[in-house]
Length: 504
Image 1: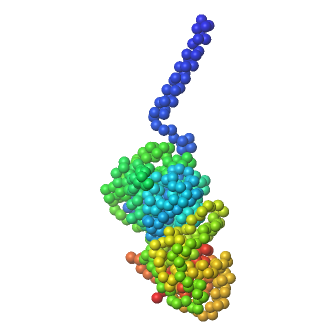
Image 2 (image 1 turned 135 degrees about the vertical axis):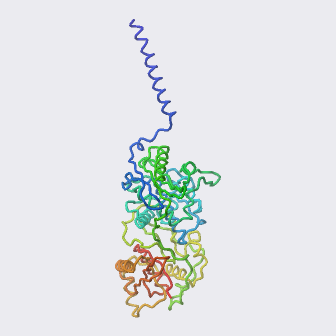
Image 3 (image 1 turned 90 degrees about the horizontal axis):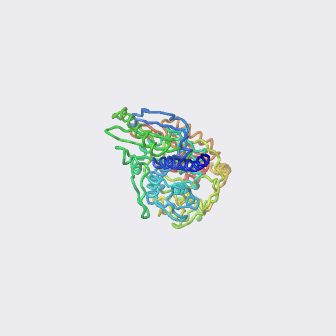
């Protein structure tokens, strides 16, 4: 009997092992396991009636969450705005840097030095959500990804995303990069309101590049009627995220889910949320989109003959002239030349935090390039302009006269030299506002921050109408061409947005 009991123990061990293996097989057959981190991430969801602005569902909509690749919505917002401003176009080529090529997946896999057109970059961000392309695009626009993150945050504050901070363009993990469901809805609506033509690219179901086809991660585009976009996202810390926009039977609902346990669970939650929201949504359109103003497309402005300007300052800028590469990651975008361009109402005049001293390799020139930059970095409208234009004079000035780090000495010297009242035919515009008091307040703040640069010039609030709205342009008048370009360049170094216009 004892021998029989001892002989049965191996059989019991084998039976237990077989049972355990059977359970494991059953679990694996039921579907992929969610990452452990994703099981415990906090959840948030919100839905809004885009026709009326009414909130139809809110669960932790104002709580901080990690955006993951929803970040790329803001990267694309910045890109669309530059296209509308004339500083980029769909054909502009973006160079892949070593830093971008080394990004974590998901990625397109371009090698350092290879180029991709802006239109292809947009589509690959929408479909494959490629991190390497997002970083390369950010570096092309902002010089460094860290600087681009600061620009993104400033823009987010400006359009009403008060609880969002961006540190990178891709959404790769960063503990300081946070948002809320409410802010993501705000961004989705702004993309639709401000860029209706570009927004259609969010409906791209698949995209073929270099012989490979990439399907959009947003399965609702094909599985939920009326879906027109917009973006998915995932990291272990954020869980599975999704922002959706649905137009059906005269109704329009935009919703966000953050913190899904799996992509399948997230999609199911989104469908249920949209079903409930659409049932309550209105077909009557009463919501008014956020007011924004954009001037006509940029044009070349002829400057008057310069006053006794040395020949070196009026020389033509060779079309193939190269600018030295960026050398410091903590430099602000090299916006050395103000161009007549489109603007949004009420630019943020507040100071931002000091830039990070992140090192960069082969940092590309920003999209805000000087008129003497290589042709691939130039907006198309600025190429081939004759030397008599404001842009060429400013570029010649940039080559021949190094900009001082402290603008105050030059401002004081200019004031001593100009005993006359400034009467030049150019003005610097810093924004457009809803009322004259707001315009004057911003001009006063700009003058105070400009360390004397603007003191000799007249501040005026110029009224104009946009549809049924009365608006006011905040301008400083009395510049000649060279003074206007040089002063605006130095204002931008002080993070005061501006551009130059010819006055009647």
